[in-house]
Length: 194
Image (cartoon, rainbow, N blue to C red; front, side):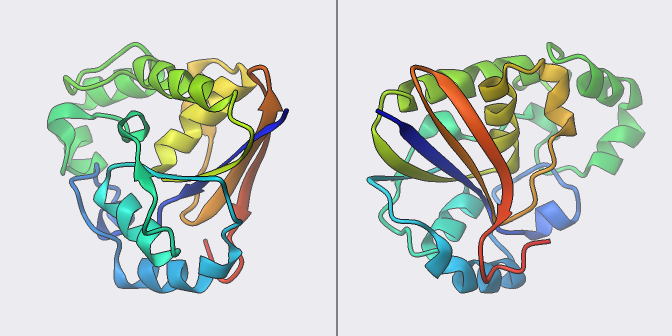
């Protein structure tokens, strides 16, 4: 039996536009408008999941997935004390820490989660999705999509930063017995995703 998992990246927010580490910021007006326009493009699914973040819940609701079940394992990357700061602010105060974080997957200078630990967490969740037959849809943060692609393809964690995930795009995984095929970056019709 084949399992299909479609990850939909959350709509845009002010934090995303400012390159600010997520601080619970909701989807902005443009993101809501695009998500509502794309609602008809979300395929039917036996299971509907959502990351616990505000932006993901807002996106799921706008896409017509209000009954989606929150999945704690799909929480975005924990950036610890950097939460709410912009990348420029952190880079100005802690340039060596940011450089280390972006090049060493085991580094967690923000006292949060390392990229390796995050990828491992997402891989464990993906292992639980593998035996499920039929289609599952999940609205998640872009970094969840990145980690999923890295683990599904067996790529090194250093590839994490090289996966671009625009808002309101679908990444589709299909497979069985833990072997995944990946189709990335399909814009949801009607979303005008960048």
